[in-house]
Length: 118
Image (tube, rainbow, N blue to C red):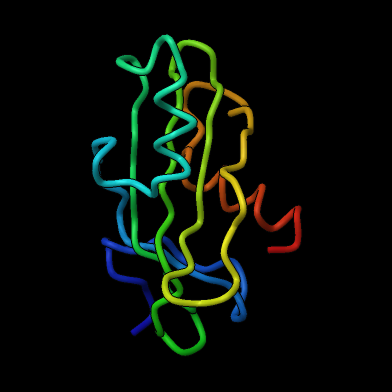
């Protein structure tokens, strides 16, 4: 097969990850640490929340879930990578800024994780 299924983002390199198409999520469906951050936001009703499953590109094994919330009016975003049942858990959600209204929040979160070496 020369092309990835439409439901998956293409990995950038063989050691990378890929994820399912993000779906809209509610506060009740995301990681509790991200939920706590979002509940403190005065404008939480305007936030858009997305989640997707993450897989290792080399082995197709599950790596966890991305939960990302963003404010379309300001470009502010927060993300959490839930690694599932492993000892390598994030201690808090990451805050980051989207570069523009058309930037993919999941892709932007993945880039932030790569820059941090995660």
